[in-house]
Image 1 (cartoon, rainbow, N blue to C red):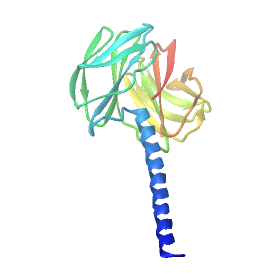
Image 2 (image 1 turned 180 degrees about the vertical axis):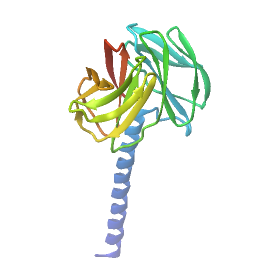
Image 3 (image 1 turned 90 degrees about the vertical axis):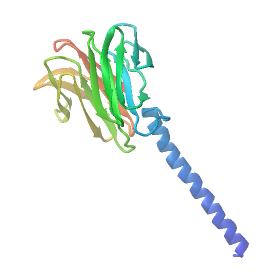
Image 4 (image 1 turned 135 degrees about the vertical axis):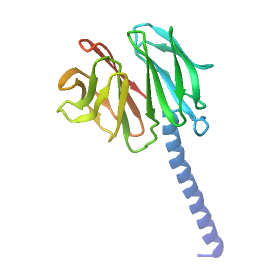
Length: 214
């Protein structure tokens, strides 16, 4: 092979390697951007709102940033803010939100018209799925288990959340209070790099289970 041909071959290999790298890292960035806003400066805090009421839409606001009109039993997208303390308003309920950098928060309005605030580490794995449970029922300690009784997330107190990274799989899950099963959750297919939030609201005798993807 001539020297010119060898140089052309080397350049072609470099271009192909660059394209492959761009596709690989670009794909990863796309997945991450699907979870949290892509333009957030390093060290930002993330927050979303959840409407756990029957009200068709409620307005959610953190500081001067609006989270939009959130439909009943749905969550807003995450918004990012610099760390700090902000006034929080969802519907007619108000509170203060103390946001730390690199944390992800959920502010939820329950059927009792009370605000529940949840704090968890932000998720960034591309190999696992994240399953979270949000307990909005007073007087309960909830666990999320498979239908055969295997624990996924255990002992989540009222007004708290718990989470676990799991392998991608189609899952049939149920919520327990101690040894008593409260309700079956809708079957869900867990995919790599995605988050699945199960909000448990209502009452112990009449629980309402809502999945939010993201």
